[in-house]
Length: 261
Image (cartoon, rainbow, N blue to C red; front, top):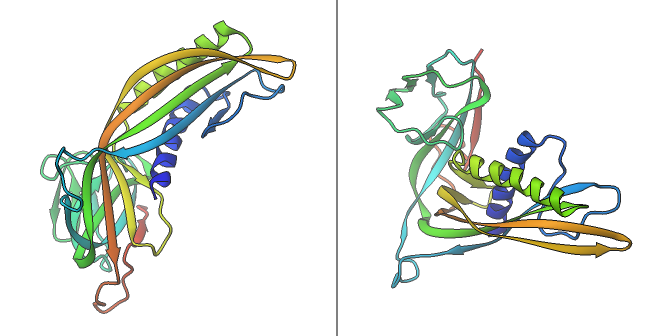
């Protein structure tokens, strides 16, 4: 499951870099030097995730009860402030994010009255502008939140040293800028597994920069490489079984898309 969290980190930074450098090829994961058809390339590689519990923490000591959950997603037109939770939604509102990945606090950002979720400022227009997590009944399993570290490596490849250096300068700016907007990242899981991973509150720090050279066939490739360390909190939710039916069938983890007219 940890590899899904690493893939989510890579995808987040890839999207940020492709927005900044739209014509650049960005590859994910470790790889060899580019082939002869390319002039430059950037690699993003989240090479590992480590849990860093406080010293002396015993296995299982950070675990809390598990709950059945349901997810809701709302579109927005940039003007609507009030969103109505559908009647088939079950459970209490546990978290709200707008846009998805950016938690917003109750009271300061929104109020909840019955099924009405009202924002003090209208969410920006988007197909998915609001994400809501509902918490239902207690479940077998556990929820655990633990400090963690993720090592991220970025490599800028070019045919000349100066080009590799210049490309890495843009990559550094893109990664560090995007890090200020990271918010919460969800690690993809297979439907029905009842396991969810989320990275919360991550802070990204530059650790070192290096340069090198590789020869591939008749071509010389130069690279400039930067290593980053992400400090955050990894949430692991393991939910076993199904909730008791209340007039309808509710899945352990369900997502509803609500589109505003």
